Image (cartoon, rainbow, N blue to C red; front, top):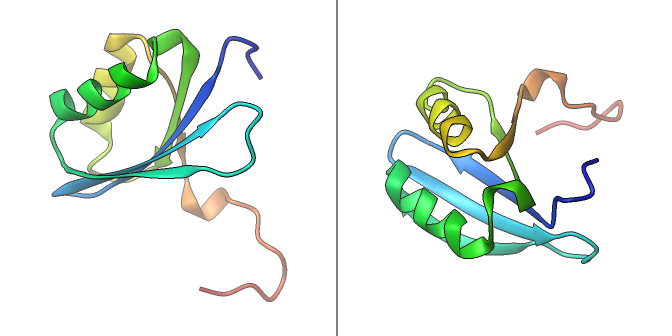
Length: 96
């Protein structure tokens, strides 16, 4: 892990909304920051309040609504990870 990362941002990206959770490095629990409309400039405004792009790592689930967001976050200098739901490890017997 990069030692410069101070804030981890979890995004739940949908066609109409983006839900945001934040976890500071070294802290125990994450905090739900709310849901905004799917508007990249509005998301960037929220991320800007959390610190510099170099100090943040954003992660969200792979899907059709995330590709434009991915390109814009890269363009703005944010570290990001797109996670494929099928590759997330689960214990045997765990079901949704």
